[in-house]
Length: 435
Image (cartoon, rainbow, N blue to C red; front, side, top):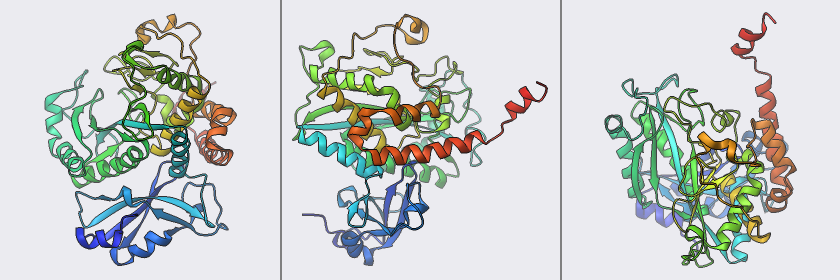
């Protein structure tokens, strides 16, 4: 039986609910609903005009309703009279197929019919910047190799500890926080979960980090490449397939290569086979391709891939095998839509399992220094336009996710690309005025 949100509101002294959804561009949208009205909203949903968000709709379309998922209920630790709810979008009595959370739920349902359950963990990197976004917030954070810098970490103790305490209060199981490879950059880790719950947490995490940073007079950005000379913001996703009950890790096999099963390597084969087509979902902005195709940064390494390869416990590859029973996909960046990213990864992995795709032999080389030795390895797209074209042509993603969401996503993202191409940069003027 579904949780009674009205009763929970009385018990937890919740005054308002944020009934929220993430649009195709990953923007978090919401309505603020007083607790006295939540019973009706739980039954009928909160009304939205779809055209007002990044969804493929028109002003003539009827009302769209966000039906809240009570299991996603998250009380804001920094404002406990407010609770957040992820919602699924409905219109005309049907789920909106071209909406991110519905897309992930569809993939999850398909997997469970086959007896599989995807569990994921994400590593969300962000940079704390000044309020106007022109520089990192800590003027003393200037080391060439700032990763794990204790002093720089502790200068942001108030922000980082508040975020970590909040995750702990929410029961997420946070277990480590560190200063990352770029100046001003941090990563905070919490326990893995079923893919839908992880996506809900990731959507809320970004909102929470930004909110707490603002409360401290600062700003947090998950932009893939906010500063050209610094390492970009990745969002590595760890994946494993479990049985339908969620008790047995089907990737684990003590007798398998590096402790992984044939099923695991078929899943990995699907990831490698579909990597280029997934890029438009995992790396969804113009700026994303300044991260995965970046020159060497101040620290000496970009820590991001540009080639479709996998290795053992080796961070220079697109996929790393850090331990038995899981893979780390290092392609995803901070701009990723949590639901579309996970849906694409699951669709690709299921394709690998269904077609018994072979990932080939792993490469135990340093891809940054010896990438030329990866003969025949596919290169990742150089820009968003190339990525969108590959997604558009992908038979695998279309068959798995449906034409409606692929077409809607491509349409809106192509409009974004065209807006970008109409922008004249100073670089063009500097290099072309005297041609």
